[in-house]
Image (cartoon, rainbow, N blue to C red):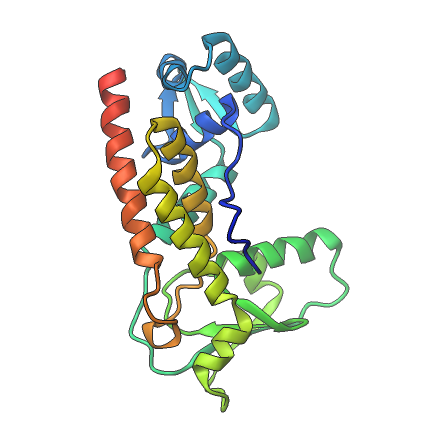
Length: 245
């Protein structure tokens, strides 16, 4: 994975993106339509546009409507869980061992292969060669069935310098540059709409943080700084939404 310094990963502020980001940041991810309409108003989105977007999201299976509330689908609740984990990762002391996953399933349909790659990325494993994934064994997280059913796992201690190995598996300088660019843009942003879009981009970027042990990272790693900046915005936006509602 590589990153471009001049691209922050910002996406257009649509009714759908505002609804989705608001629900992803709400625990539990469930709000009344009227509340989502008022959040949309913070960004100048008309009520009719918000309600049309909600109808389309229900039809697409992104949200469900129950008892006057809209709530995230199970698929997006899993995404919320991954986002929460990226902000407060479960780590443990690293003893030098690496987690290695070897794909053992044969003749897999394309959908299964795609699902496995997505799951491996969520587990923050990197592919060193086709069918072989690895990372330092410093994370606490469960393996989903799609991974357990297709892979065998083992622990290893590579002979190669661990920092050099990590640098070959992840574009660490690129990730750091992108994180610092997002932090700088946060500091320069003057409107809630700009900070909202930057917060969503920051959260997407944190999902790609490999969460390596400190000794394998370049100096002045900006991961914790970007998490802190997102936490500050979440507090700010939460207060704004409560006041507005």
